[in-house]
Image (cartoon, rainbow, N blue to C red; front, top):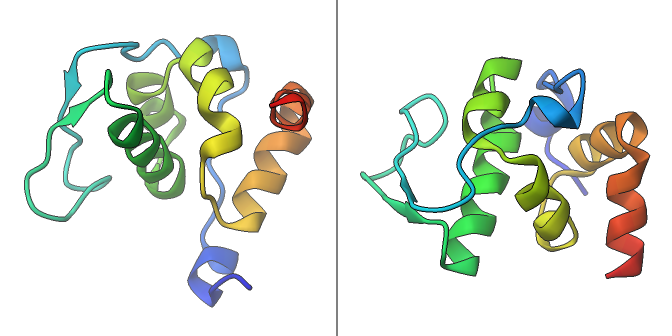
Length: 107
């Protein structure tokens, strides 16, 4: 079951996965509009941090620029199956990028 907020919130998608040129390693601090909790540094070498950051960016992105800045195509393909996302978001991403669903099924 998804929340009304998740259903009403517009889904932001890139035109192409190739646009996602964000960091593939290092430490990332997200801006407040993506992560409004306590200051947190995401260590992308830590699987739990990486998955959490990707979930937050995909859920909270206001523009495709947010996605391009913080997501990386290769990392996204690797972690897609492990992301906990609202159904409308997962459906929209997999409808535009069927290879994500195929990668998740193979994992």
